Image 1 (tube, helix red, strand yellow):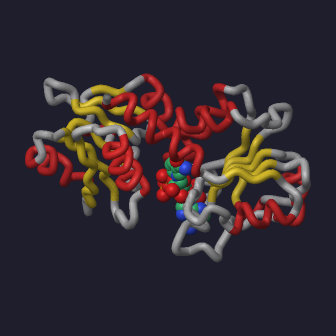
Image 2: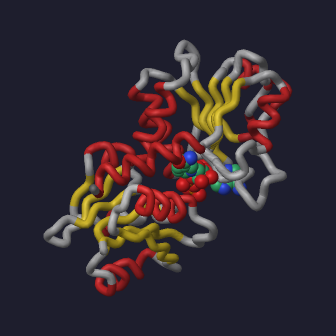
Length: 242
Ligand code: NAP
């Protein structure tokens, strides 16, 4: 039986485990999907040595960038994004890294007509944000970044004015703020300036409607959660492993 897995820390309930376990059962694929909670990424070589049947794995928080030095090869997209969420173990034991978050986002973006005459506002500067930046660039959508730290992005949250919100019709939350179990919080932006011309996209998929999306909906914006992207990135991982 082939083994696939998710590495990250901490690993609570995992979408990937249920998704692949159900997929393997439904499609009669002789494989299983395990969760490997690694306290540090240094534990990876020992994990690989003890699981020679591992054919591929997904990588989640906080190792999407830290995994790169452990890989033998990087796909061009993962190289450009600077983050990896899917690893294929090649027949010679070498490991190749891919970024299927990008494919998931592209799938999503293709289904919505996004405002591309104005810059998008992208909250967060981590691995998921880098995937969004890659896709926005590729689709010719300019963007400004927002970070908690000054010097790392175009704006800090304190610098965001209602005028800035009005001039950015696509706002993407690529931070974990509002994710279960901390569902009562939302990124600190002036929501009062959101209009029915805005689109708010949250990469978070649990809960289905975050506070960020709820504030957007209450101001008339179109809202998109991270579920579509999640499914598309999982299927793209399988296409790479299969
Ligand atoms: P991450 O690296 O832990 O965090 C992303 C960025 O968010 C950080 O670099 C940081 O940017 C900002 N941030 C972190 N904690 C914050 C806080 N308390 N307040 C304000 N900003 C904060 O996470 P990630 O891997 O990029 O993922 C971000 C989110 O996207 C997660 O919720 C993840 O589940 C989701 N995601 C969803 C999918 C999907 O398929 N739907 C795929 C990938 C990721 P600054 O330091 O610059 O502020």
